[in-house]
Structures are given as C-alpha cells and as structure tokens.
Amino acid sequence: MQSIMRSTRLISSTIRAPCSRAMSAALEKVHFAPIRESTVSREMSKRYFEDLHRFAESDVIITGAGSAGLACAYELSKHPGLKIAIIEQSVSPGGGAWLGGQLFSAMVVRKPAHEFLIEIGVPFEDKGDYVVVHHAATLTSTLLSKVLLTGRVTLFNATAVEDIVIKNGRVAGVVTNWAMVSRFGHDTQSCMDPNVLESKILVSACGHDGPFGASGVKRLQSLGLVNKLPGMGALDMNTAEDAIVNNTREVVPGMILAGMEVAELDGSPRMGPTFGAMFLSGVKAGKIAAEAVAKYDAGATTGDKRVVAQVAGL
Ligand code: AHZ
Image 1 (cartoon, rainbow, N blue to C red):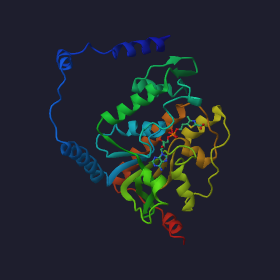
Image 2 (image 1 turned 180 degrees about the horizontal axis):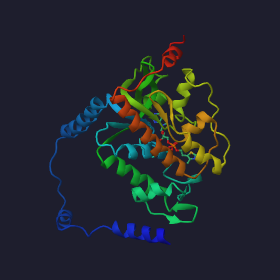
Image 3 (image 1 turned 135 degrees about the vertical axis):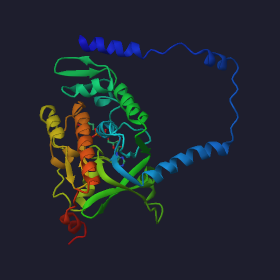
Image 4 (image 1 turned 90 degrees about the vertical axis):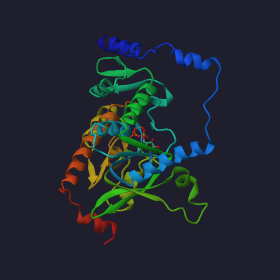
C-alpha cells in the first residue's frame, strides 16, 4: 500500500506543466532558425572525436549497457572525479531490460533489490517478497537518464569491444570497433583494424552467451586466463540471484565481472525474468571498481606475473 502511494506521488510529480507561452507562440507559425549543413556535421563530429580523445585514457570502462552495466555506471557516477565510459555494441542501450520475460512488459524484482528502484525513483507495486514495475521501460529509461545526465558517464553506442588490452600483468583497456564492422565487416575486407581505449579498470557486463554475449569471459578463456567456461546453469531463481551478486568480483587483475557474465563463468544457474540480481551485481561491481581505481591511483595495484606468462603462452 505504502509503495503504491509512493508510486502515485512519483507519477503525479512528473505530470507536465502546460505548454509555455513561448512554446505556444512558436507553434503558431513555425519557422526554424537558419543553420548550415556543415555546422550540423561539425557539431556532431567534434563532440564525438573529443569524447574518443578524452576516453583514450579512462578510469573505468564498462562493456555492455544492459541492466548490470547501467547499474554499475550509476554507482560509479557518484564519484565526481572518475572518467567512466560505457561501450555498447547495440545502437539502443538497455540490453534485455526494456521488457520482462518473453517480451511481456512488466518487470519483477525480488527484495532487497527494490532498494535500487527506490534510490533511482522508479515506481513499483509492492507484493511482499518482491515488487513489480508495471513496464520495464520505465526502469531502463530512468536508469539511462540518471546515468547520462550526470555528465560523468559517456556512452559509445554502436561500438563493440572485440578484445582486451593486457599490460604489466593486468587488464588495461579494450580493443573496439564499430559494431557493424565487428559483426559484418571482418570477412569482407582484408584489414579492419580496431581502435584502443586504455582503462585502469574494466567492468565486463556482456550478458549471457549469444551473438555478442559473454564476450568478456569468452576472451579470458581463449587467452587461458580462466580454466573453464561452463556457461550459465539451468534456471533456478532462488539460488541464481544470490550466487550472481555474491560472486561479482575482480576475476583477473583489472577486470571485474557483473551480471550474467558471472553465471557464465561460474556455471551458476540463470534466474530468467527477475532482474534484482542484475541491479545489485552492477552496483557491487561499481563499488569494487571505485575502490580498485583508488588503489591504482595510490600506486598500490600490482599485476600478476602469471597473467603475462599465460598470455605470452609461456
Ligand atoms: O548488446 C549487449 C547488451 O546490451 C552488450 N554487449 C555484449 N557484448 C558486447 C561487446 N561489446 C559491446 N563485446 C556488448 N557491447 O552488453 C549488454 C548486455 O546486457 P544484457 O541485458 O544482455 O545482460 P545483463 O547481464 O546486464 O542482464 C541480463 C538479464 C537477464 S538474462 C536472464 C536469463 O536468461 O535467465 N535473466 C536476466 C535477468
């Protein structure tokens, strides 16, 4: 009851004010201010390339803007000094969080993850042990706007992470390409060299196995940095969510896993259409990442000789 009241208050507080006088006047006879086509082009490309230039050295890079990656970015955006970039292969960030299960619109979130919804201001219906967000899109659109409007997180969408950088015994960045090139380009041209972004910490939140999914842990396996990659186990909601959050961790120096990639690596069960673990895993990954950057900046971070040896095939 309390939460329904809370959600009613939230909805009524977002009801739009009537059209301003200036807007009403502008609509009477529309005539846009003039602009040159080249100006539009320069405004876009200048900003994009300034961002790329800036994030060539980042504090934290997050691969994947699904529910876990976005929750991680939200947590990290609380740290004003951090340079945070999200790399998302799809044009539309949000991963699987635009809908609940089987393309139904409601999203079920088990407690205690409802605390995340309260923190970001998403209304829900309280059902006792769990809560229901009437349309998953309210969660994803709210989370995205919270993350991007801080100005502390930059999103590179339509860009895929193709590989990781390993230097001095730790993960030190990502190798990227336009997603269209990663997906369709490599077989059509002899050379499609990528770009590189360095980072102090990488959070891999690529979701479970699929066309791009689980690409972080799959690369760790091909480099011999994890022994086995069992893939997520069969569905069991009651064990899956605890396991993913509790096992969210730095798996290799410099690289933290969040969301379903944790289950891919551990072989722990999937949870299907309940999203609480994704939020809490993302938040936990954000906290681990912020601490790891502070350690890195204090010069207290060391690499692992075994990582270097493994990658070099020694
Ligand atoms: O496009 C992917 C998606 O938006 C993106 N991504 C994956 N590989 C990438 C790469 N470069 C750039 N190499 C990449 N982007 O990562 C995002 C993953 O989001 P997701 O929603 O698929 O994963 P999640 O772990 O955040 O949330 C999983 C939600 C699921 S799956 C599931 C089940 O199957 O049981 N249950 C839940 C709640």
